[in-house]
Structure formats: C-alpha cells, structure tokens
Amino acid sequence: MSGQLKEVRDRIKTVNNTQQITKAMKMVSAAKLRRAQQAIVEMRPYADKLNQMLRNILSNLEGGADTSFGEERSISKVCIVVVTSNRGLAGAFNTNVCKAAFAKINDEYAEQKANGSLTLLFIGKKGYDYFKNRISGVEFNLDHVSLFEDLGFDNVAKVSQSLMDAFENHEYDRIDVAYARFKNAATQFFVAEQFLPVAKLDKSDDGKDLKADYIFEPSMEGLLQHLVPSILQTQFHKYLLDTHASEHGARMTAMDKASENANELLRDLKISYNKARQESITKEILEIVGGAAALEEG
Image 1 (cartoon, rainbow, N blue to C red):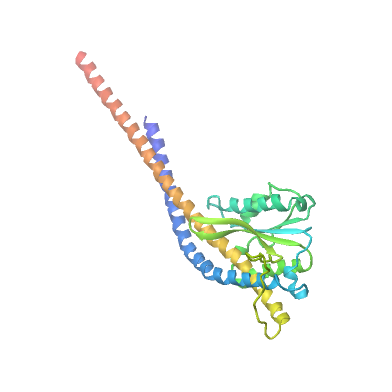
Image 2: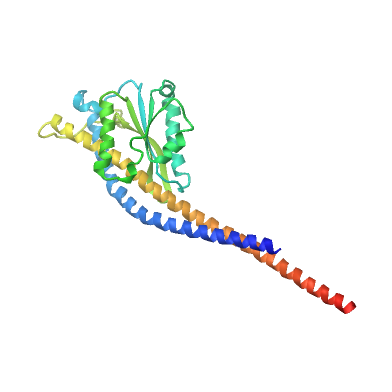
C-alpha cells in the first residue's frame, strides 16, 4: 500500500510541475499575443483597402508589362506558400494550416502535382515537418523557413519580391498562400488564398462590370510601376502578421486548456490518494485491533 501511495504522490508532483509550465507558457503567449494582435488589427484595414483598390484597377486595365501581376495564364507551374509557426504546443494550429494547403492541392492542383510542377515554399518549420513524409513528387523550398525570426516589413518584402519576380519570369503561373487569418485568441480561419495573379473583382449584382474610378497623376504607368509591387508586399506581410497573431492565440488557448486538464487530473489523483491513504490507515487499525485481541486471548 505504501508503494501505491508513493506512486500517486509522484504523479501529483509531476502534474503540478507540468501545470506550472503550462501556466507560464500561457502568460508568455498572452503577452506576445497583445503585441501581435495590435500589429494585425492596425494593418488589416489598410491592407484590405489597398488590395481592393489593386483588384479594382487591374480588373479594368488592358494587358502590358505594368499589369503583368494581373495576367491570367494557363496554369502549368504552381507555388503554394505554407505559413506555419516554428514551434508546436499550439493545439491543431499548424496541422489546420497544412490541411488547408493539402485541400487546395487535391481540389485544384492534382494535375500539377502529378506532373511534378508543384512547389511548396515553407515559412515556419512545422509546415515542412508535416509535409515531408506525407507528399511526394513535389519540390520543397526551405529558403525562407526561418522568416518568423524577423517579421519587419523590409525583411518580409524580400520574400514577396522574389515571388513576384518568379511570377513575372513565368517560373510560376499561380502562387497561393496557406495561412491562418486571425479573428481572436480562440478563433482562427485557415485558408489558402490566391496571391498571384491578382484575383479579378466579381461583377456587380446587376451583372455589369465594376469599373475603376481613379484619377492617375502624373501618369498611370508611372504610378502602377511603384504602386502594384508595394500593395502586393503589404498584402503578403499581412499574411504573416495574421498567422503570427493566430499562433499565439492558439498557443494561449491550448495552454489554458492544458492547465484546466491538469486541474481535473490533480483532483482525480488527490481523490485516489486519499482513498488509498484511508485504506492504509484502516488496514493498520485492523491489524492493531487484531493484535490486541490475540494478546487478550493469549
């Protein structure tokens, strides 16, 4: 019985230590989440409005070198950017991002995968860890896997610029980004979104084309040459900030749930410990009483 009590005591100690770790990780994630949430909340309205403006402009311009980012081509070579975190302990966060990318591949790019014309570019180590043993015949690009170490705009812009250059040079005909769109600490949306070419605007409710209502000065060509890459870089930066905030929200929620589970486990272990202790005391009392009775009879 004493061995059983010692085993339960050791388990209680282990769970207590684990709970301290999960509580500390929750506090760290909460602090990081506040900064990451502020960054994406401040940027999203600006990025979304710029993206809407870009789609509006490119939907109503004729082709040409300055509008190549809106050029629809026959899709033979595809790149999917998979944006995950570098660390785990965030529940199903990274898995759900990868599932969104997998669904995109199966639904739209099965032919390109079969032809060996699909590239997966990983930002964050967990995406590569997920795909490396689950998919074959696909090129893996690990050049930017550690991008989350520096999410400054200038650093991220180097990656988005390299993707834009690859699209312009016909290295890829379609570039999508699988990421987590942040809503709040408990809710994230896992999507695979078209990055290039810029998606065209839908028609209005009455079936008429939506026309761009902008005045360009000094010239449309000069403005587009600088405006379009800048907007695309901002949009790509938003993908990473969204995922960054989603990661910390998911980790904070996961650690909170782990702490709650530890509480429940501790309660059950303490009940088991008290039962075992009562049984041990009862057994000792019975032995004492039995020994005293035997002495009286003797």
